[in-house]
Length: 503
Image (cartoon, rainbow, N blue to C red):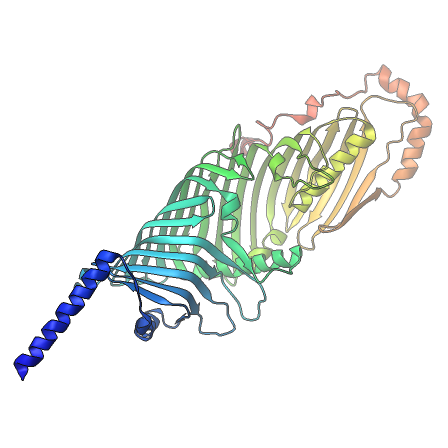
């Protein structure tokens, strides 16, 4: 009897081995729904307290390194109100020999259409999510450490390669990601952070959702993660423009989250940023340093039916701020520091930017140029910031026929603006009406009008111009047409940080 059982078992093993060999040589895959319960149970034990569900078909390719593919995967958080992580399809190739050593060697893991919500909160209708069209690599799990080698992240025209290490033994966990790419297309990477359930949202609502997500993500990163993210590329492209080489290094250490270096090298210029955020009691402290030199801004403008051509010109700026506030979104309203900027338009058109301040500035420049029949040489501003209130030390707009000096206050705590501008003709003229301009309102909606008392002064100047205009000409009270006395150069203004400290 025993011999007969052993004979049948041998035949069964031989048949299974033969079937496995036939399927392997033919390259077939077979439905494997029978694996669903076992896979779900094992994965949920490893992912606890998260819960995984497999809603789509499961297929098995029997090879020397078996491959299991699954689709319609959802990873659910303990709170059912929170959004879920979704995977369009997951393919895993397993090395069976590694299991004998107690480790897990997934020779190839490929995920398509991966969406990971960022710092979700209960009841929030919208939230930002990381979205990659494809993620692949070799996953090695040994003890408390997981290593993802030969990592490839794909998103439209950008392909990032590198490695990732996750060590769950220390508290907080240690995460190290190193990525590189011959070319990074920021337009395609902009889709990596997508706003979920935002189809009918207005722009302010979308912005508030992103800011709320940023608050939570930064606070959790400080508490829960240590490590670094490094990204290097030879070419950065955005909206069809070349930014040259770029590098980014973000670190999290000792409860301090830092952008150690963000650097781009656009043709003829540079962009540099450094930032750090850390807990101070129940609040957050932050410091920000930014320098932009000789940057061609034209591609930042949006083409519209009324303005089909982009503006052209360059800008330079330097920013140095420190702040302390309960949340990241409130830091600017509490900030102290300085801001210096210069703009040198080459082809001024009615531009449309994604930033309200740029729209206000360029609308003003275009209005001055068209009303005075002149071209704009430059706009230069030097501001100091105290507790979220930015006040101008110097504000000059120079055109070929008129120079405008002004005073400005921008309150980032209540998001209001107040600006007084005094135009002056470069050449003294008879009956010239130099009316002061006042701009006031909120960041979202500001209006322009005549400064209080300015109209009376303009009328007096207008009436007395036949007397004083010849005297101004006689004594050389004129201004250079090109504005070289105030416009300086985008290569030297604003002064570099070291030069500014020496002054």
